[in-house]
Every structure is written in structure tokens, then in C-alpha cells.
Length: 330
Image 1 (cartoon, rainbow, N blue to C red):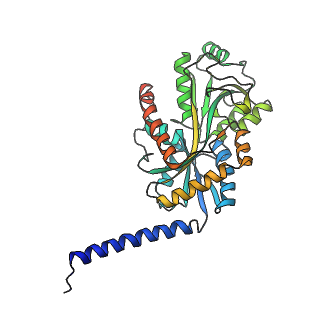
Image 2: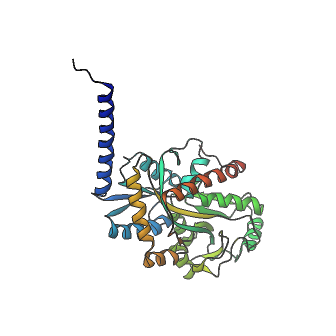
Image 3: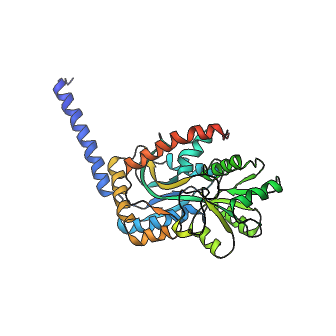
């Protein structure tokens, strides 16, 4: 029988720790050695694609190939849960937002993931506002006229969002309360793309949507009419569209964001490598212009720590608001 002294045991433990650290360092240095998957937790064609795909293309040029996979459903929860279950090796990333990481889990009675315990924030890509957009046949041109129309046609006006518990849905509920139109009908979709298609086709009268390039292009082409945006100031890409504040609703403010997340146990080294490469990508004027042309504001100064704090602060801020309106799903 071989006996080990306390010094031998400590030496072996220290050696093992060094070996693990060295292994992690080597993995980070070789990362990525294969394609990275970016999960957009919404149906194809929506704002998630408008944000995630340009980043993926630029990131691929700088570090390694990225492909986008759309996993829509449950307001983004299905895609989030899928990434949360993946190995924490940096090869499955999530394009999350204020809905997936704040509102959906807070509004769910049985959330399928924990936005704080299951994920690490990497980098906020953009901030954005939501827009109230209606079908051109609806005889309204501002929020005041929309409220008057809804009150005169009780129970007949509906609005589409990418799902129950999303930021879009929350803004809709806030609007209903502040405008005094409780019977405005919410129609949840599996993504903003299908909702927008139904708006253009006349199946629904209104959407509350991220001010994406697609939405702006449809507005310019007369396929829909934008009434107001939820940011504090007008958007440079849609300077003719007033804010909800300007439209007489000072409490209807909501600025969203989209950013990158990885499974919680992903190493510091890999998180830093993704964040540093993303910062370099976001410094590219061409990528910035792609986002700004869509009404989105690129973030050129994010970091894992800054983004993590933003998520946690927003989670704490929104919890009492969601409780107050009873937004709880099974």
C-alpha cells in the first residue's frame, strides 16, 4: 500500500488545477475549431434575423464561421431553452433580448430556463424601440386617432406580436391600460415575420413591432403606417414618426435590446474571445450603417460585465410592473 504525505496530496491537487487551467486556456486559444451556431429564438424573417445575420457575417470574417438557426415559439422561450441545454463550449450562442431574458421568464408560471442562472451575457449588439404600425386601410394617423377608433369599434381591433410575454406584448398591455381600451385583442404569433405578413395582408389591423429594416421599408412602400415609436427620442431612420411621449402618452416608454449569450458554464476565456471579436465587428462603419438604416442603434462599447448588469437591473425593474398587470402565463 502506498502512503502519501499531506505535501504530496497538495502537490497533486495543485498540479491538477494547473492542468485544468492549462486545458481551458488551450481550448480558448484554439476556439473556434468548428462552426458556431447562433440561435435566433424567433421565426425566420423577423427582427432577430435583421440583427443576428449581419453580426454573424462580420464575425465569420474576423474569427470563424457562424451559421444562424431559427428556433421560434413561445415568445422566444423554445430557442432559449435549447441553448441553455447545450454544452458550455461557446459553439451554441443565443441572440437574446429584453423579452427572452426579462419579460418571458417573469411572466411564465413555469419558465423553461432561468435567464440569470442558465446564461452568461457576452455583448449587447443594439438597442431599439418598438413601433405601433397599422394597415393603411385603418383610418388613423396617430395614437390619439387610434385610441378614438378603438373606443368607437369596441372589440374589433386586434394587434399582433411575436408572442405572449414579449416586450411587444407588454407594451400592448401598457397601452391598453393607459388608453382605457381593455378590449383591444392581442394576437400572439411565432415571430414578428408572420405577424407583419398578416398585417400587410389585412388579417390583423395593427402590430407592435421592433423598428426593423423590413418594417421601415414596408412603411416607405405604403404597405403599413407607423403611428409612433416607444423610444424617448425620434429615430434617425424614421424621423417623421413621433414618439409615444410626443403623442400624449408620457409613460409609454420602452427601449429594447438584442445581444449575445452563452450557456452559464462557458469559460471566461471563450466569453472574452467572443466579446473582443464582437467589439471589433461593431466598430466597422459598414455594420453600423446596416443597423442604423433599420432604426437600430449599434453598441460599440459593450462588455460581458456591462451587459450582465444591464440584464440583471432590467429584470429587477420589470418584475413589479409585470406583477401589477397580472401578466402571468402557465
